[in-house]
Amino acid sequence: MQKILIISNVFPLDKNPSRGCYILAQVKLLISAGYDVKVVNPLPFVPPFFQKLNEKFQGLKNLKKHKTIENIDVFHPRYLCFPGTMFPNINQKLAKRITSRIYKWIEDWNPDIVHLHSIHPLLKVGETIAKKLDVPFFITVHGWDFDVGINNKKIYNSIVKISSNISGICVVNNNHLDIARRIIKEQQSHYIPCHVDIKLKYHRTIDKFDLKNKKIKLLFPANPSRSEKNYSLFLNTVKELEKKGWEIEKDYLKNDSRKKTIQKFHWADLVLLTSKREGGPLVTKEAIFCGSRVVSTPVGDSSLWLPSNSVSQDFTSKALVKSIESALRNDVDEWNIPKHFEAGNVLKKLIELYQIN
Image (tube, rainbow, N blue to C red; front, side, top):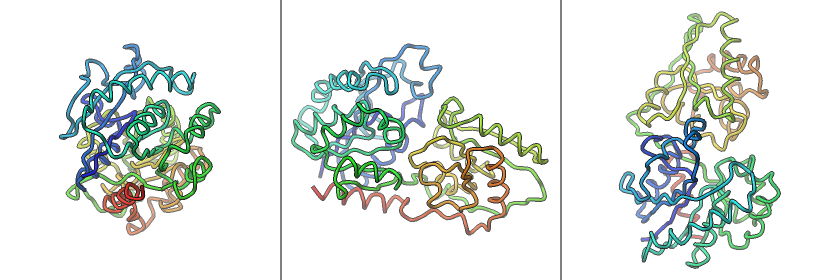
């Protein structure tokens, strides 16, 4: 049985269950295939008011260092860091200090693979552990690192500097493959998306929409406080729809449990994604699985698989209204999720990834 140490800057917390739920889903997928997996989810020290201002930091107060989530051992070492792309070299050095605590936590449980989800600021943490234990070191990029972080010269150089120690970089959309190939060899760059982790009993088919009714339930698939999700564009689109005579009910996702999130997908006629950037996004596949249509800005992999008329090529409310009204006319059989987002196909790719080394 191979042992895999997952290191991730996000992972679900008791008071923030949506945080990194896709990482938990992948861990469970690996365990289902017989892998022995432990998770290190380092958490930054942040002032108390940060938890109220930023969703990412909610749920950190009074959190135990060691815990078990769905029978998975999780360790939350704390470290100092500056926000975003500020002082990247200092951040990576500060984060690296937690490696001694990680060694102490795993004791004689020596992983065969180290897999880091995200790059900055935990890059040196993953590399150091993999190098010391002499095991393959993989990285999965979920969005920010290649959409924002890589534009910082120091972050980019930090990756290039250790590229020879990276066994492979995985990306969750094809648009990021070119960036990965600039850093390491093409054969070490892999497209492995996040999979739809919702039980079959929650699956719903999409019904034909009654356009004459002019009533629609819209779901914003994120916490409005996250600036990159562009909630203002969502609200402006609602206003444009109302000008055209639409009666709108609206809701949004916050720090909802998976059960609550699925209930909202079932409730919605259409999920409206107005993001400025995305890795996947996984939420588009989950929404369609649960019976809701999706309209999206041209981010992540949306243009590659959603019906073309449901993806706005412009980040404007008028363009999105046009896409919404067009998408509502689509035949129900146009809303299909490609098979490569299914759990079995993602697991197959992960197994192949780990076996090539």
